[in-house]
Amino acid sequence: MSPVLVVLDLMGIFVFAISGALVAVRKELDVFGVLVLAGTTGLGGGFLRDVLIGATPPAALEDWRYLLVPVVAGLVTFWYHPTVGRLERQVGVLDAFGLALFCVVGALKSVEYGLGPLPAALMGMVSAIGGGMVRDLLAGRVPAVFRSELYATPALAGAAIAVLLDRLDQPYAVSALLGASVCLAWRLLAMWRHWQAPMPSGPASV
Image (cartoon, rainbow, N blue to C red; front, side, top):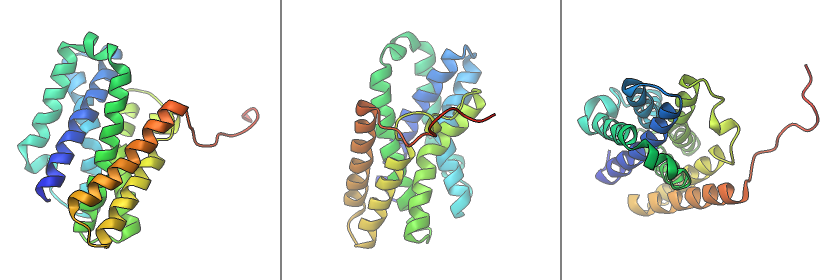
């Protein structure tokens, strides 16, 4: 994987790991539980992506930095969780940055491993939302991607743009930056305007 993608990957892991650690702290888990949810959130999407595209063993098992980053994020959150918790809005913004970073990293890495444009874009989305889904399932919650403001859609759009620009022979940095910018802007607007995917109308049948 190119150095640019590695840096973006590690940045996304750190941001997502903080969100996972915060969930663990609020569930009153011990330090081990905090580290497990931090690691799951930070590494889950990328781990799933690597297995699906045949990039084995996954990067998280080959490069010590991939294991160190979520541990650091988890411990920082564990020790300073009152301060981090008060910054929840800022953490939400950081989570949007993580979503944007992961969707383009996942898409462009999938292209490197020979996937076509559509599968690569889907892998970018999986990279971005996979860790959060596993985190919520472990924490006994309905995954946020199913109940919060638009989340998966911006990730898919950002991944698709990154793949399209790569197909047009644009530099990695350009493809990643523009794809991530679209995802980030869409996600932040969705948070601000409370945009959601359509919900069923009327009372649910039993």
